[in-house]
Image (cartoon, rainbow, N blue to C red; front, side):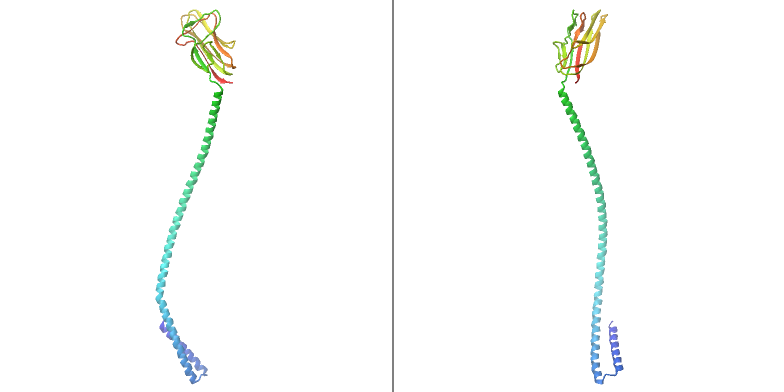
Length: 278
């Protein structure tokens, strides 16, 4: 690099001398003066070239440091790029996990909503059932419970009599509502409604008629009798469903000349109960 600078300075000097020889207008003194000045300029230029060379050398010395820094920057960039790729992969993985979580959350929300709807349906049904129970309780409270069952006697034979008599079933087994009177043998309807009645009459006397009537108020609703031709156990039974008004009475009577029997086994029975009120 130094040889090139010196060669360039000499070339400039030769060009200047050639230019002066062609012009022929410069005197000897002037030539010397100008020659001296030109030498100074050439030395100055040579010094400048030297300084430039020194600066170039300095830059040449600095250049390896710049390359090292550039390499370091390149390595940092590569490292950051790798980190960026890793971060991108992590972000994608997080996004996938987030999508899975969102799907699960949506599924859970749907399940919660479905459970909420089912719960509302159950609550509605429960409320309806509670209302029905309350209504039944009100109806049950509004209508009395009525039921009775009684046996005739433990004394054995009853009858015969010359007139028709009311049978007094004195052995009371059940008398809910107290609608049946064992003293009179009469059932009195406490409410308007539909009632069920049943009776069984037993006879054992040989060669005799036995039987009984069932009355609604003063009207005979049923009459059952039989003839016992032999010494054996014979019975008759019947059942009716009657519509009664409040205060109507139902009872049983023994026909004149008839004989019936009862004992500890409760073979002659009179029963009844309210089916539903009207």
